[in-house]
Image (cartoon, rainbow, N blue to C red; front, side):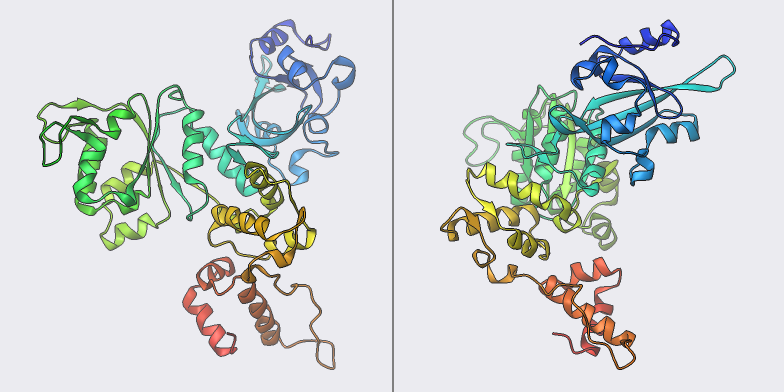
Length: 440
């Protein structure tokens, strides 16, 4: 489709829009679309008659009010307030369904320096999907979008990224997404499971060895650092690297060089480093089990991976996606989904997949019912059940707290550490309260 313009817009601004390969629109300060380039019309399947003078939030979000009034961040408003370029990741409606879009808004000023227009450029975030997908990252919740924005910001650079999250949150999947969206995507992505490397194997696996370097070294071996040349080296569970070996990794990062075991020849390293850990590395530094200088080297750009309980809005989408990937022609009953939403998922998405695999085998028909779940996944009592009050219709505050804690303990299946974290208190304080209130 061809682009459309408003006849009153200066020709040089229209020409500027056409320079963008990505979809771009010219906006007035009251959110109205004045002009669009060819890429916008093609990708969003629109034309002059259907979009001109409409509000951007009507087209992109189907909202009747600006994004900031609908609970989202609005880059246009932020640009007007700051006078600077603003960037945010949004979910946009397209003819193909909702898609993650990296939106950048640039102010356009007149000769007096006053903002008269704003140019909004939209780049599709291809590393994730907001609908069920056969591979890659899937999600649409706020916690997921916050993580995705951090991935999209850091991917094009060579900055060292530290992925922090619980086991089962998909750290290797995120690391692969970082690689695929980087300038190094044509080279290798090399994952290293650090928890499986002993001290004797660490150097040989990472740096390689020469023939005869030690007993059993019958041939020269290329190390993983060399295998990742030009690409990405992903160190999973970096907190499990023995303290004595951390200094060797630090030297590699500081000098950009290494030697194969049994060799005196120095090799040049060329990789982008992504690390991951479910451990609290800061605490390990304080305890002396992780080097402080290494921690600062690998944590230049930390990204938090939300636990599944932090993104329960994504649960229906994740369930549908996982069932598709398992080639299961089966659906969840609404009551089953309600049971899963009341579960704390200590194993996160990895555990959700295992739950669905087991339930699929237990179901004889084409629907997974609550009884097909394991006993610990049975629904917790509803938190909005009425609680009998005293004769005046008011419950003592301590009784309200006791009943609420009883429900939450049931919901978190005894995982007091996670429950304390969600309640914003220490695990010791929670234990004391449970003991005082005689809650098992």
